[in-house]
Amino acid sequence: MKQFKTPDLPYKYNALEPYIDETTMQIHHDKHHVTYTTNFNNALESQPDLFNKSAEEILADINQVNEAIRIAVKNHGGGHVHHALFWEIMRPGKKNNKPSGELLEAIKQTFKTWESFQKDFAQIAMTVFGSGWAWLSLVDGKLIIEKTANQDSPYSLGHTPLMGIDVWEHAYYLKYQNRRAEFIENFWPVINWDKVSERFNKFKY
Ligand code: MN
Image (cartoon, rainbow, N blue to C red; front, side, top):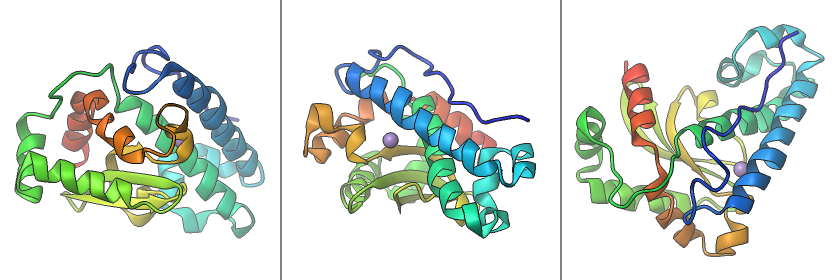
């Protein structure tokens, strides 16, 4: 039976320094993500036909998951999928990091300017109460900024997340303590806009 695996980071643990520190990356990937994946696999054992689907498909069709394991699948399946995406949409940081081409045009069209997009996204990320995520997602080909609590997934709403920021305290507390705004500010340089653009082009229709 195919089990879900925690993907390796596509870079070294220290690759996102100084924006995201090595220890946080190590614990976040090796402990938090691995635990989500393990618990996701364990939950699916009682409904093994789900192993034939992708994790995103399972989340998108969460009502097909037996009620006895639905919450576990939502939490741990969500954790598995969201972290896999999070690692993928980051890369070593650079200043003045922003998208180009069609994605930048779509962002400007939707959110007026690049700066107002950044402001709106940061605002949504700041106002996640407790644990959760802020996302740039596609809904029917349109860009939106949204937030979800805990590991609730945009996929379960029929949305496709293009990129997102984890604002659970485990994502930033070691380096930034309670300063979430500073963590969000330091997320911009490490976004892999090539990867986000690739997702935009793949999912825009
Ligand atoms: Mn996390």
